[in-house]
Length: 187
Image (cartoon, rainbow, N blue to C red; front, top):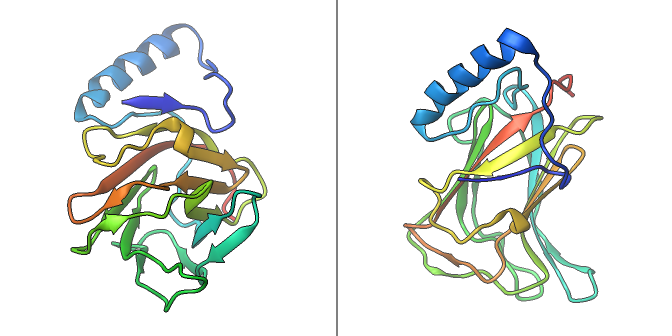
């Protein structure tokens, strides 16, 4: 499993003495499930989020942005994007996005293809918060079949950017990210 901090900085400690030992022991036991566990972390549940797909050109200019869809996290599948009719030769690849308390999963339908190769071609999830929402993330390599690395993911405040440029999609393509979410107030 890959771990990365959204801002590129290292992980901090924060608990002392016996609490640290107890917490680490609990985390070791719970991590046997395959997903990382972060004690004291916040949650994505109940947060308002807008999802867009975006593509940029070599000079950084935005050449495509899908219609934004906004939901409150907590449903079985938050987003089920379908093609929108295209613009400048670009269109949305059908995808389902399921957001949990500390996890986001992407899965694709029966259509197969390859995402356009661009400096950025991917997903932008903007959570309505006035703080840095993500303290860290991990790619669930047991679930993920796409060649996503920490270099494909960045966070800025309450925004999450996932670059899937030049990657293949299809019914076997999946991506899951686990997050350490700050205790930011719901926005």
